[in-house]
Image (cartoon, rainbow, N blue to C red; front, side):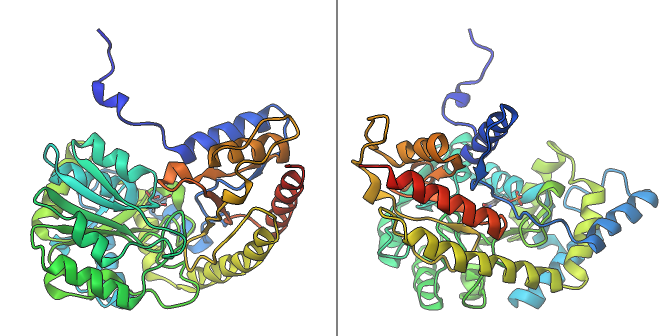
Length: 399
Ligand code: PLP
């Protein structure tokens, strides 16, 4: 027999992590690669945050903590939700984890029974379906289109809900499309969920602070009854350029938070203490670094979108949030490369751009939306211009 569990056949390595490995390998072989696969800010963690961790380590903050997180961080998280989202939570409704990713996984592990369904609008963050599957659940994907702004409608949601539905897992601003639901759209979605009290809502707000055209409003604020069945997931990774510190936080019903805490106590014990102390500084001290990061990313967005739209075969919508563009490359499909192969899918386009342009991007298929590619603009303007030039030049060689 095999050592590996059967469940390992149902899941794959995260495509963005796999892409990172491939880029590293090519670079190690001496190839020059423009990396547009990056899922993290290229900015450094602000100094006052890093200093808080250094100070904390010097003062002995190097131990296990309570599984739900240190009281100071839970307090800072409560203040953050009140200050920025108008949401009030008590400490027993809050939890800190090793990234938003661990908290999403833990919430699913704590709640799914075999064949429970989780509704996931596409395009979706690649990890959602695999995390649902790993926990015995069934991901139910809802398709959206570029025409609908990569958003699902209340009617679609209504139709997808059945007795087995346990969660709607929603991500806005969205990775990979950058779409954001409007207030009216959120109101309609909240109304559907209000009519189905057995369905819980998990909202992934990790890109909250990268909202370029409108103030971000949490879906949890639209309905008081729905809020009692909502898990809000967020973290410091993106907003404060702290991906490697691995700190996320979540707010939700006390019984769920308690179950998640039990799971964490038996798995990772707690999040790293120095990182938790740094997160306290991030959430409680000057927020100018977040506004500045948002300004930088908005500027990059405004540069990359026209550059891509100028390329024959690309159609790129303007993302309202996050730091990705998700252009259609359907105009390239069916074309022939200088080697004489035909580009049949978005994955073929990804390989062509890597081999012929030295530009790494991710395929929309991985995000449940074939015909598109994901390009990260979490990289500086010179690299953005260089990469777009290389893509344009490679595309001009297609016939
Ligand atoms: N949610 C989405 C939509 C993401 O894109 C990411 C990171 O790429 C995460 C969650 C993970 O965040 P964290 O670093 O807090 O685990």
